[in-house]
Picture (cartoon, rainbow, N blue to C red):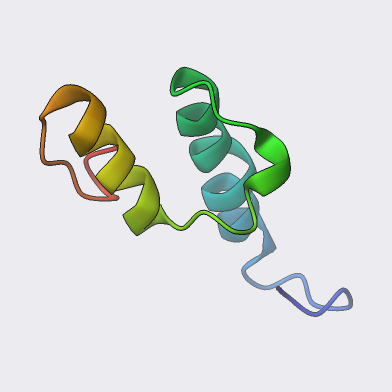
Length: 60
């Protein structure tokens, strides 16, 4: 997803990918092995289906 030799943008990518998305995965009891296949839009749709709340990525 990002050049291993680059430091620019790695912290933001880590926060978005590893911390924020995995928190949503854990709260929705999803398998983390599929985290590369499930997008933020997918997570928002799953949340909408489960709760009826229409959240965006920023809301989640």
